[in-house]
Length: 187
Length: 187
Image (cartoon, rainbow over all chains, first blue to last red; front, side):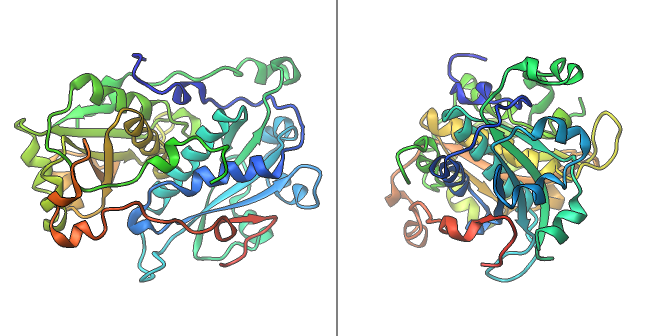
């Protein structure tokens, strides 16, 4: 990192240890508010967020979709969010080639706003996508993208030993492997 | 917006009028550096960025892919970037259900870092995706996602009249249409 980059981007990572405390509704809505301002093709805004706060009747419905490997730590999230994406444009019902890309941008906004407010986020693919569609009444017009655990960061020691070993920010590929001038080169 | 949201998210929009000035390499790399830190499934980092700066031999190769409607304004961008996404995981070559979503997160990071540095960005679908694969030697392992124009914001008056009319930030759906507690509701 040079000094030019906003610190939000490197401060954001995906811890698993969370404190299990409740989240304030205003805080939660601020996260979605940031997501809301993401760019999208034809401003179609394909993203939708289905959430369940801990200690509410909806919590188990989302939590039960998770694979066991995620349950062991996501049980201490403050809120779980299933992110879905509208497959067709609203204005003409034609398939959007970028709806997932657009919804990914909204997720990034949410994750960065979370950092700014002292929350941590962890996106998961380890849950039952098919059952999510049924249990959450998700229309066929939408594709299930990910489930996100959001909470306050907890101590590393609260995790099972195997997860403690990976409770640190991941590294990234060097720019030379992801940035190419003029044409594609396999790296 | 309440006061809790970081201003980056609302300051980011997609102007078309750009000044046509060159971009410094360090600035350009800072944008990619922000993108690099996005989250991705299994930290697979499926995003790749193929760029061409104006006044370089590569510029026309990317510029010529654009539809006429985008050429009229994108000609004043400082750099064009074709964003592509790896379809399979690197570690096992199995299809990734979230690679586009992940690459969209990297694009959001880039766009927000641009705001932070006084640049504007505008993502486009109006270009020849198939020809991009050929002209830029893009491997079949990757999917073309979008082309991004990046530059310094220019005066609205420099645009053709029709584009002047849409040179303002778009509005967004209210949270009540994109955020749902417990289960999906069509809005």
